[in-house]
Length: 251
Image (cartoon, rainbow, N blue to C red; front, side, top):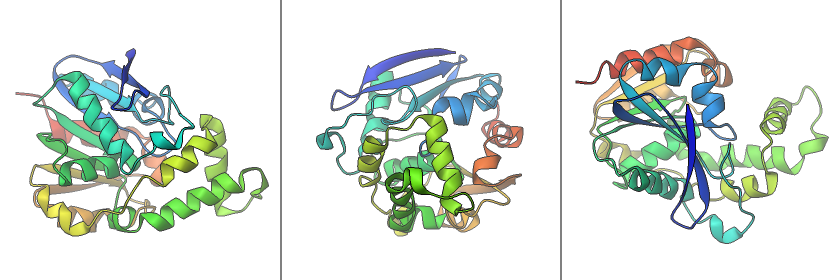
């Protein structure tokens, strides 16, 4: 596993983790997580790399080893889509596959639906229609976690989220600004995503609405369920196995 940094479109330094050799697969992690927490720790990246892929894992700004600027100018609308575009430009790749989990899946769908980037295939993990079209509700939940951070009592549904943010060392000032950069995606735009797609979701995961409904809205999607809740599914080997099996061995 190698880690390097590069400058995004505005000079913010972002971390990139690499493993394996072969066809490029870019992976994007979930909200307040990291490449380490979603892809590396549980063996998913290694499993896919063994199939003949170079797995390229970004840490979004405010996440993992990337910078978390406090300047409001560092958080324009859809900033994470712009960061992914900057990554693709940095890598200078044209023929590649793209995958994301939760926020990473949401960001990938925005980027591809709007023609910002052009992967050959797309993996959408832990994401449903509500996570795309009703982001304001999800954002409000996390703003409350940030604003009431030390005062959330045990037993409150937000307590677990608060503990997760604490465990990941999330910069709450930067995180709150980031939450305001993510617009809803018009579900009609999903018709623009004509490349082959895998929609994979935990069988107990309802955090972002219906993943099955999302798969039905994509022109060329395969839907696969794996065991687990939203947070739990990413810790089980089934997620990486489903991704590796769908990708297959590169030609």
